[in-house]
Amino acid sequence: MMTLKVNGHDHRIEAEPDTPLLYVLRDELKLNAAKFGCGLGQCGACTVIVDGKAYACHMAIAEEWKVWYLNADMAVSVPHRLEEALFMESFDLDFAARHAAALTEMSARIGLDYVAIDCAETRNGSLLIFEADNTAIVHDMDPPDIFPYKAPQMRKVFDAFVAMLDRRARQGRERAA
Image 1 (tube, rainbow, N blue to C red):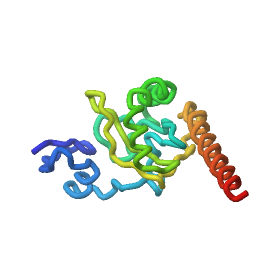
Image 2 (image 1 turned 90 degrees about the vertical axis):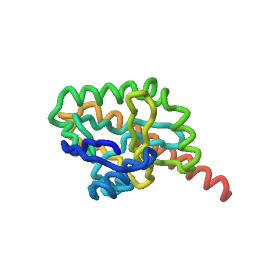
Image 3 (image 1 turned 120 degrees about the vertical axis):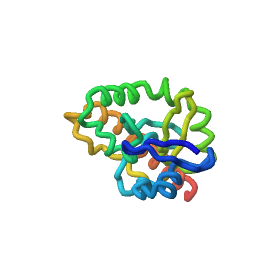
Image 4 (image 1 turned 30 degrees about the horizontal axis):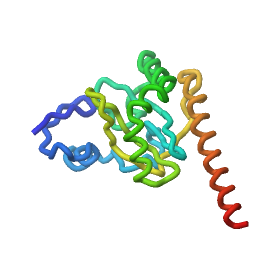
């Protein structure tokens, strides 16, 4: 038995310790807003892997568990946006470096050129994966006056995606020739 605080309410949960959080949210708590994929764009992706390289896309910060990035109220919290900006700025040398082995192995096992990962870091520094999905929408729709650091970060992701498509197209043309 464990207690889980979700959207401001404590819930007593009877689940095995290795039960994915998504199953607890959907099956135990009947919070059906949590999905296997973010294909409708209700959240951005925490991290995306494009052609084997990880990129930060957002960091939802809240006082309690929030189901989606949009629910984390990042737009109204300057300290949370500063933390997200630092996360994006230091991502390659910090988060991605600490979890390089796990992200590389996950990318290899999934075997796709593009995959979005909704993840977090536990208090002991372990990587916690909520979901991995190749249909998540990575966007640059946040207001630049509130999130000035996001457009340059998303440009890195979009440029990597275009480069991956170009490389794949060249490989296809070379095989066809």
